[in-house]
Each structure stands twice: as C-alpha cells, then as structure tokens.
Length: 347
Image (cartoon, rainbow, N blue to C red; front, side, top):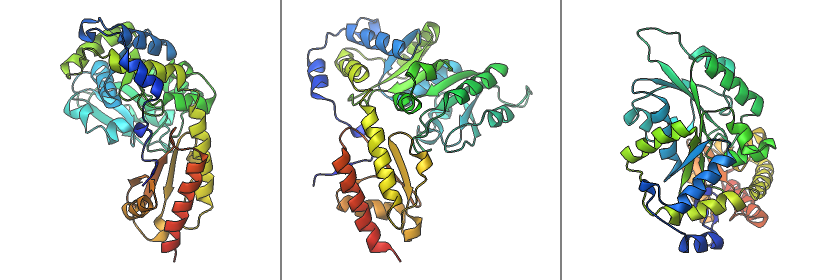
C-alpha cells in the first residue's frame, strides 16, 4: 500500500542532490578535526543561528544531552517545561548520564510563562540542588508544534540572567519556529547560550543534528561528545547532506505549514474529532478522538488500514506531522481516511 506518512518528519528521505553530494563528499578524520565537509557544515550552521561555533552530532537527543552535560555539573538542577522533549522522550539521559535533576514547570501548550519559571527557581539553600540551566523547546513537540514568541524568549533570558542560569534551546525545529514568527533563526537563538537543531526532520537530511554556542562551550561539548562515543571519522559523507539541508530545504517548510493548516481545518469539520486550531502553528497537528469512545491506538490502526499513518498520544490523542512527502492531495486523502474511520464509530 502507498501510505500517507505522517508519523513524523524524521521519515523524510534525502533528496537526489543530497545523495550525490554524499557520494562525492571530500572527507577526512573528524576526530582529528580534518574532515573539510564537516568543518564547512559546522561553520555554516553556526552562522545560521548566530553563534561562534557549532558541532555536528549524530542525533538531536545527543545534542541536547551534550548541552546539559556542558552547562551543568552532576547534581545541578535544570529548569524544564513539564512536557518537553528532553524530559519526556530522551530516556532519562539528563539524570542517568548527565546526573542532573529536572525542575519541571508547566507551560501553556508547551510555552513557558516567565513568572512561573521565576517561581520555580529556589533560593540558595544547603538542602537544594543548585539551579544551573534553563531549557526552552521551540517549537514544542507535545504542545503541538507551538512557538514561543520572541518577547517571551527575551523575558525568559532575563529571568535566567537574574538568577545566574545559562539557557539552552532545544530548537529541533527552530526553522519552523522562525518561519511561523516571520524572523530569522538567529533572532530566536540570540536569547540563548546554546542551541540544538535537527537536520534530519523537515530539512530531510538522512542523519544528524547541530549543537551551537560559544567557541569555549563547543570545545567542552566536543570532549563530552567523545566521552559519549559520538566522535565520528569520515563524517563528511553525512555532513554533505546537512549542508544542502541548511542551504536549500529551509524555505520549503512553508509548504508543510500550509498543509498542516489545511489538515487541521479539515479535521475540525469531521464529527467525532476534537482539535484546538490555535495550536496548529507549524507542521504538527494534534487531535483527539475521545468523543468516538475508542482509544488512540485502535483509531491509528484503523487509519493505517486506510493508508494513513499517524502517531498516538494515549489515551485518545493522535499526532500528524506534515513533511515534504505529503502534498495537498495527500492531505485530502488523509482527511477522507479519517472521516471513514470516524463514521464507523460515531454513536
């Protein structure tokens, strides 16, 4: 069956141009700092987010973990939104590997309120872990691809400065956030000390993410990367695709946003589907089937039999992520499949 694939934008395939660039990439040993293609990618990426330096890493999860390890000492506290990716989906690495204690703050659809962050940072006390870092996720995955606006980023930066915290940005989809806000990515990243962004989601590279920050920060993070086993050799074969991802795949994210909006509007018209359209800000669409009286895994299984794949957020939530392999015709086909499944279960 030819599926409409909306489980994640991580399922995007590299373009033909990427494959050719990978084939002919000029390479060396990156652990020795001698891979010219990796170095070119890192320089390009640092400039794109307005930082002094950057480092190519195998995954966003590793990039976030390296940021936590580099900003914090073991036993320190990191302030996080309660549904953020670092806390929810990264296998507890911030505690199991970095030895850091999470201090959770509930946001509104993933967006932190600076006053709530201020309230969560405890005063110096011999009994408390020392708060060392604030992490922001923009866009926010579990919030539904929601965006933290620039004034809120600036206010969170001020809170961190007033309390002596560094700031890390989990910007896995920072270019989606920038597009939604009508700014360049560096205008978001200027409010943080470090930023991680993915090359392998909507930008369609096959592997890899970027961690960027000051030159001193990246030197320390590079050593931590080696400790985690993330030192790569002729990594220019992968970095070549990342260069094309940054140079040529950012602007087309607008198509994913437009298709996500169309999907969200269409879902809102289907009886039995609940959706908050205010959260459909980028390329992620969350919706709920509680009114149908069935659980999300069953709905997703039936939808897959109709040729549409989505992910579940049990008990009754589902998520669709638009990507370059789903066009407007794919959106219409997906809406038809959802309507078909719903029709079987409406009371």
